[in-house]
Amino acid sequence: MSIINSFVSSPEKLYSFIGAAAAVSIPLIVNTCKDFYFDYQKRKTEKNYIAVQLIYLLDDFVYQCGEVAWDQGYNPAYPEPEDYTYEAQVESPTFDMSSVKGEHKYLEPLMLYKLQSINVEIAKAKDTLREITSSPDFDHDSISYYFTVRRREFAEVGIKASLIADEIRNNFKVPYHDDWNPRETIILSLKNMNRQRAVSKIISMERRASRVMQKHRKQQNEQA
Image (tube, rainbow, N blue to C red):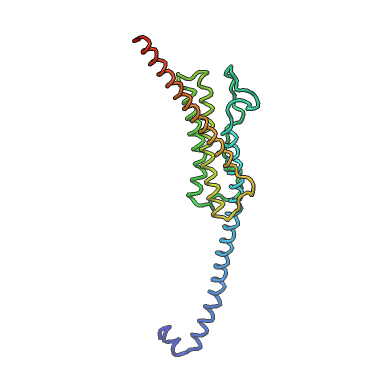
């Protein structure tokens, strides 16, 4: 007689089998569900913990970039040096994720990629500045230009880092500071540099127009 026929002919055996199976499987299912739940809670707690640290780290990094974005190579409390004694007033910022405690594996791969790319952007900025200083045309007259490029390069890096911080804040529902955003000082610096560049361009155009007019008048006088 097969097992099925045995169960059909004797319902007591079927009920006993179901009861025994339930006694074994239900605790196993419950324990498995509990493990999944606690693992989910652990991952969620860990991700929130890491997110808060990352926001703090990014805000501090953006602040450092903002400081470089205003560094003209001399103390602005004094006149611009005429003897080319320019010197960085603020060190170039660094971004070190090793200071973030917790399991980084809980972060999304794309977010990890974006965070690691910050150091790539720093390296690219330094390469740009190295190209200026290693050029055979680099001399004392190029120092002011060097610091302007340095300001712009790290301003751009800071803006990119601030956008990553925004994304983390939105994903984890972390509020912004009520009265402080390190990106604002970078934006002000960029506006200031753009304004100065526009003024310099206008002055250069005016000087060029003046030279053309003087040349034209000289030719007219010679013809007269």
